[in-house]
Length: 166
Ligand SMILES: [Zn+2]
Image (cartoon, rainbow, N blue to C red; front, side, top):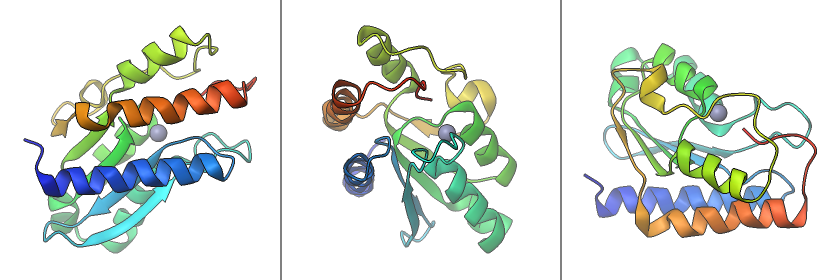
């Protein structure tokens, strides 16, 4: 179930995604929250340099592996503007993080990109649970999906890239 607290963290993810777009990067933002509600970290995509592994969920998973105990990781929640890609889902699973809450699903994003004629990504748009079967995942969150869609539409309208998005 999505609570008002969840929605607050997801709104921050959308804000981070917007900042990322403003900074010339792709609009993905994520927040890592401890079991007691403390915000532990936040990040957005850093793929503009050409390194397409620089996703926020991957960065937060690595941070968690280095700074949190297994028990702390298991009770932490990862909020994100778009569902984890398979790379980030795998990192999430290996590190043993807890719940995932996303705004837009990988399938939704893939649908939008197809609709806009964006070249197919080199990595399949699998749901997180196809990569991490026991993951606790919630989304999409309809209240914020249009905001995320608008950010991606801006990216592909203003700067059609030769490189595919994740
Ligand atoms: Zn990813």
